[in-house]
Length: 249
Image (cartoon, rainbow, N blue to C red; front, side, top):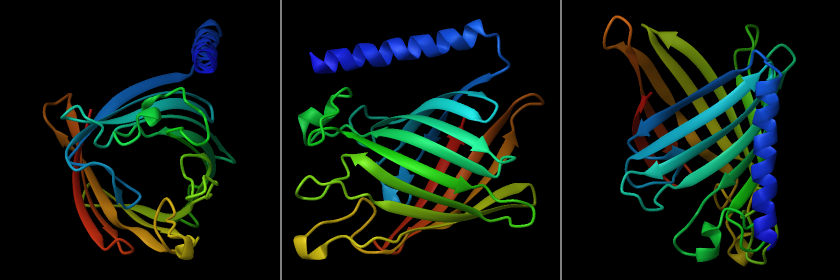
């Protein structure tokens, strides 16, 4: 009964939000699209062993944005499955962005975690994360983002929240009509190795996400171009290396 009430509260809230948006005749923007990726690698961790489709939809007005994003394997199972909802606000002349994200990771191992409206601490498949990002400026063209899990499935062996932390530095530039995004992400918090526990990003403090993404729009016709991307991603802590290719629509 509790999960049913949460479902109706969520559903009615979404109806009221979009109803208010339509009634106000604002100049907000509704956008949607999808990425086809050779595999799902996020912050240096592989979440799928094969190709995935990643759809997204977002409504934005001014500095505010609310959206949903997902990742689903081509074979239809839970390999890389994810469904997220986020709310963000960009302020101070676009220098900073604060974001609240509700990540949902259904799994095949624990049936209870496949229930989206299960928000019980010990069985939920959700993780709530807060992030604050400095988006860089002309005088300092380096982006800095800090993200921390503060509730949900990121728990230790006792069921206590671990507050896993991730920090990423980035720099973007262009080279011969190709956009290059360089990134370096690390986790500064050590897990409790004596208890056999592991943080969300790794067992110890260290770099988990090093690499770059190259992207370019390839003209198909005079009016249509196809955005392509390729990423080289290294995770020094896990001793892994990934090469990911993507197409956006």
